[in-house]
Image (cartoon, rainbow, N blue to C red; front, top):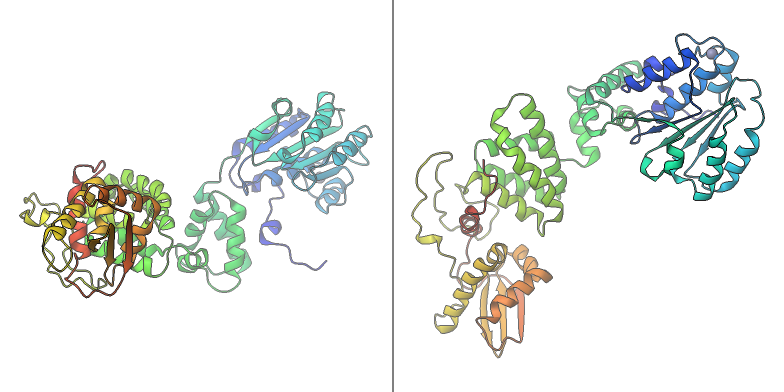
Length: 485
Ligand SMILES: [Zn+2]
């Protein structure tokens, strides 16, 4: 077949010395081969792409090589050549994932009785061995209990905890660690140069960071992107749907500078682009860690909070709101009205300069908002009190409710969210938020038969701007901030 081998397969190490990472495992295996002190069964456990199968094949050649050099296979003798070309009858690879049936193991049990056809050892490599059925394991165990001296088993698994202890206990097991980023980056550079792929500045490092310790993943990405043009961090980010490094750095810079405006604008920008904010939080943490390690002490106090943010965001009712609250918690209030807020012509009260010990600006507007029906009166009073109570009951409910107008008639409370507050409207329709709302509303309106929520263009009085809502919320949260730097 003329099918082109993938980069990963073509660059698969042919000698132990070429294996990236895993030095301890490699040293142990080489020594065992060189001294002829082999176990009957080996198990390589570890995440994908760290070299389990590569090591298994290397070991299969090394034990059968006619002229091994210090435990390394020569890759030239007839045995090595046959195994390398996949034509050896003495090295059998079984994919546990696709051969879960017992037949293969039964066949294996019949075969192991025979001596190798031309090699010293008959080697059975069983990949993803944890996928074998219980029955297959039982059959395998019988062979493992009394292994013929010419048989070598090599198991590989990503999930060693699913391998029965009876099998595990008969193997020499190696736990392969994820490959360090710098080693992956070095290998990527080496292969890119040999293959004629152009790498932009920082591209190898970015690739290594995205590969999660898997050299295979890194090389697959290199192949996919390197063939179509110079590989840059930006292309990689776009390909993987990640936020741009520039955005991540901008957010972290804003955090350090306590610049709520810049950070909120960025959140807006990300949300508008449909960027996955949970992924963004993940990237933030990784990048912050890198920058701290590189000596940026100012980011150090944020690591704990970023860690919590990353954990919380995927479960957050609204990821955007959660991220905005994070900004407010750590940066204080925005200084300028957000241009994207259609109703934001309200004069925002200036925030205290970051980091200064000035007292909070006067607190008259620290009172919860008093939006409400156009007419004053007992009903308006009650509505305003309800909003206040909502703040007390649940801060986010207060945020969602603040811009709404409420009217009550015939047992029905009607809420209208003005234009520009579609998000708040959607939030209020959430089952949990709505239940909290009804619970609070029941204290003010009796009978309360139903709460109707509508979204409409604003024709009434100006609702609370998001800045005001945010400020109120920040004040409300202040006593609860656990990890403010
Ligand atoms: Zn050889």
